[in-house]
Image (cartoon, rainbow, N blue to C red; front, side, top):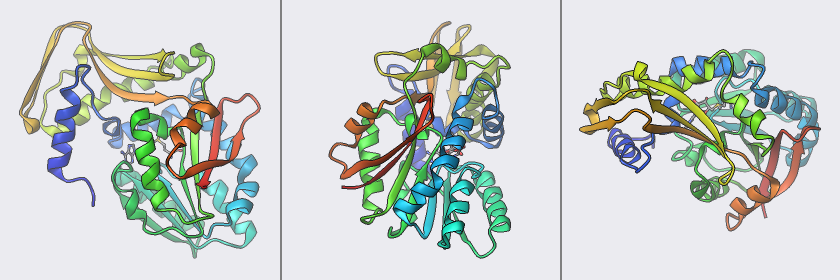
Length: 312
Ligand SMILES: C[S@@+](CC[C@H](N)C(=O)[O-])C[C@H]1O[C@@H](n2cnc3c(N)ncnc32)[C@H](O)[C@@H]1O
C-alpha cells in the first residue's frame, strides 16, 4: 500500500517534534527538486553520479554473469538512465524480460518508463509510485531478479533504519537474486563537503526547496527566505548532515498537522542525511539481515562502490 494521508501526517509531526526537528528527505523530490537534482548530478563537485556510471559500465558484464537476471528493478529510480548500462549487458547475454521502477515522484516515473519502452521494445516495463521505506513488498516475489538501489540513496536512511530496510528487501529475494547497492565511500572531508556545497548554489536551492514542498503539501507557511542551506561532515557518525538554518527568528504554522514551529536565529531543521560507508561499516549493517556481500565493485580512487548483496 502507498503511504496513507494519515501516516504521512503522523510521520511529519514526529519528525518535526524531534529535539533537532527534521523534514523527511523524500520531500526534496517534488518536480522542481527532481529537476534540481538532475542538475546537481552534472556539477563538477558532484563526483558521485559520473563515478557510479563508470563503475556500472565496467562491472555490468561480470554482474549480469553472476546474477543472470531476467528481471531488473530499481528503488528510487529517478531519471532511470544508469539502469541502461545493465539492460545493455542483459541484452548482450540474450536474457531480458522485465524492468520495474519504484519512485515517489510520479512525473519522473512516467517519463523514465516512456523512455525505457522506446529504447527497449519488447521489454516489459512497470512503474510503482511508492515509498521505498514502506513499499518494497510491492515489487512482488523475486526469482531471477536484480534489484538496484543506486546513487548512495541508502545513505539517506539513518543507520538505525538500514538493517530493517535490508531485511524487507531480503524477504523479496530468492536465493541467487541480487541487490546492488550504491555506496558513497568515506573519503577526504573537504571533497565530501564540496559535493554538498557547490559553487553555483544548486544544492542550496535543492535543500531549501523542501520547505516549499512542505508548504504546498501540508498547508504550511515556512518563509523560505528566512533560511539558509547548511551541509557539513560529521566525522563521528560518518555522514554529511544537511540542514536548513534560520537566519533570523522565524515561525511557521503547518496547518495539516496542526503544529506551529518557532525558531530562533541559528536554529536548524535537518532535511537529509547522507551516510558514507566503508566495507566494514556496511558489513555491520548487513549483520542479521540474511544478506552478505558477494561482489564489491569500486573505482580506482575508491570514491564510490556498488556492492552486490545476496542471500547467504
Ligand atoms: C539520489 S536520487 C537517485 C536517482 C537515480 N537512482 C540515480 O541513480 O541517479 C534519489 C531518488 O529516490 C527518490 N526517492 C527519495 N526518497 C524516496 C522514497 N522514500 N521512496 C521512493 N523514492 C524516493 C527520489 O524521487 C529520487 O528519484
